[in-house]
Image (cartoon, rainbow, N blue to C red; front, side, top):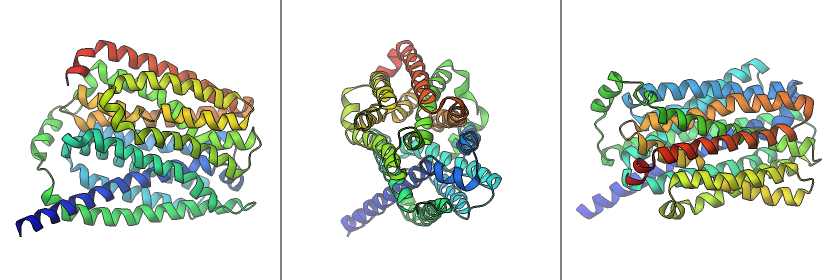
Length: 407
C-alpha cells in the first residue's frame, strides 16, 4: 500500500514537470511569431521594417520591467504559481493579437506578452535550481531542448496557417498559440495543485525576508554587470536572427514565404540538436568554456550563412551556427546561479534581462538600418556585436576562475 502511494506521488510530480515544461513550449511558439509573420504583418498594417521591429522592441520593454521585478522581488513569491500567471498573461495577449486589432493595440499586446514570457523564463529557471537542485544539470538543458522544439516547429506551424496573398491570415497562428497557452495555464495549475504536497519544502518566508531586506544585492557586484553585458551582446545577435532571418531570405535571397521560414527552422534545428547532447557536454566542459569556444564557432558559421549567395551553403551553415550558440543562455544561468547561490531568481533574471535588452535594441536597429542598406549588413554587424560579448565572458571567466571551478 505504501509503495502504491509512493508511486502515485512520483506520477503526480512527473506529470507536473511535463506541464511545467509545456509552459516553456508556449513561450517558444510565441517568440518566433513576429519574425516568421513579419512580411504578412507589414503588408496588412502597411508598415515598414522599422515599425515591424517595434513589436519586438516593445515586447522587450515589458520583459525588462518583468525581469527587474523578478530580480528585486522574485524571492518573495511562489515561483511555481508565478509561472501559471506568466503563461496566462502570454496566452491572453497573444489571443488578442489574433483578432487583428489596430497597430497600437498590437504594440500593447506585445508589451504584455513580454511580461508573460519573462515571468515564465525567470521564475521557471530559478524554480528548477530551487526545487530540484540535484537534477538541475539535467532539467535546465531539458527546458532548453523543449524550447528548441517549440522554436523549430513554430515557423513551420505559423506559415502552414497562412493563405498566399491574404495578409490578414497572419491572425491564425496568434489565435492558435494564444489558445494553447490558456489551456496550458489551466492544466499546469491543476497539476501543480496535486503535486505541491510532494515537492521539496522551501522556506519561502525566510527567502522573502532576506529579499525584502536587500532586494538589489546582486547588482552591487561587478560580476552581475559583466554577465549582463556579455549576454546582452549575444542576445542582440540572437533576437535579430529570430526577428529578421526569414524576411532576409524572402526579400534578399528570393525565397518564398515557406522556404524563408524554413531557414529559421533550420537555425532552431541546430539549436535542438546541440541541446539534445548538452547534458553530456556539461559533464565534460564547464559552462564558461562552452559559452566562449562554441560562440566563436557560431559567429564564423553565421557570417558565412548570411553573406554567401549559395542557398544550400546558407542552409548548412545556419544549422551549424544555430547549434554552436544553443547553450549560451543555459550556460549563463549556470554561471550566474553559481556566482550568486543565495539569489537564484535574481541570478536567473540576468539572462532574461539580457534577452529583453537585446530584443529591445537590436531588431529595431536592424530594421532601421535595413531601410537604407538592406538586411545583410546589419545582420552581419550583429555577429560582430556577439563577438564583443564573448570577450566580456572570457574576462569574467578568468577573474572568477576559482569560484566557478570549486562550486
